[in-house]
Length: 64
Image 1: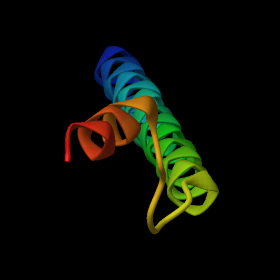
Image 2: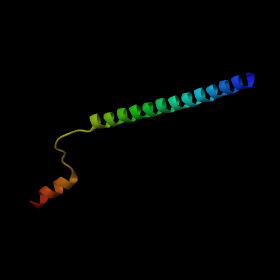
Image 3: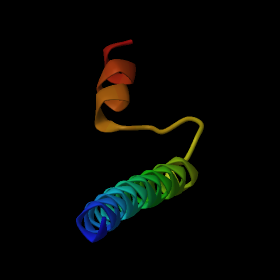
């Protein structure tokens, strides 16, 4: 009877370890995704919009 109880406690320990590892992986994945989203938002706000006169455009105007 005690051997059966030992096997059950080992199984429960292994299940708990597996669940802990899985939960840690999910937490790490969501943290990484949030950080990546934050960085992409920073890039979007740093870009300027509107007309930019570049050398390519000046060359085109010179051909007119």
